[in-house]
Length: 222
Image 1 (tube, rainbow, N blue to C red):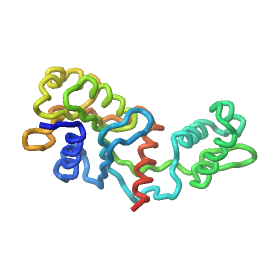
Image 2 (image 1 turned 90 degrees about the vertical axis):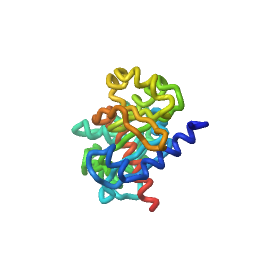
Image 3 (image 1 turned 45 degrees about the vertical axis):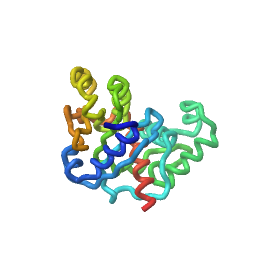
Image 4 (image 1 turned 120 degrees about the vertical axis):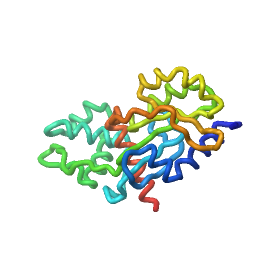
């Protein structure tokens, strides 16, 4: 049915461009955007589809994982000095100062009397997200990878060609155990959901924010 995983990914993306397909995967109607091979440093899903509110947090600078880590550190402490940050992160003062400058420019932190404090609340544009791992046959490997994507995505799916779905269906209890959804591209080239993914907050707040930064960066290019 499909010669390569790339062919499978192309067909998945075509389905996701259909509003009817999107409405079947998400709870609420909203704007959506599709990304391929999003590298957030913890596995690279073949496809990520997000719902978003583009009225929120349009800006010129975007946070890296390190910037987000510094922000989280300051948010969790009542006050933080540069020496505290150096000690806790083991990073160079120059790298830390670059992050602090970005966070101050975005009004996320403030500086007073030698200390850094949380200022405005971090606001995200993300409303919902689905990460997808596409595989021609190896459902076990796909399940392992899809589970990792739950660190930054609300829902995660494995998608296989319908001709190769039976072994995965025979092991559906594993998909239920790990909260991963299972779908296929059927003989009509339509996305068919066999088991809905568990909808949970992403395991990592920092990685979720990194996905939000990826989205904001893409929206800014319009």
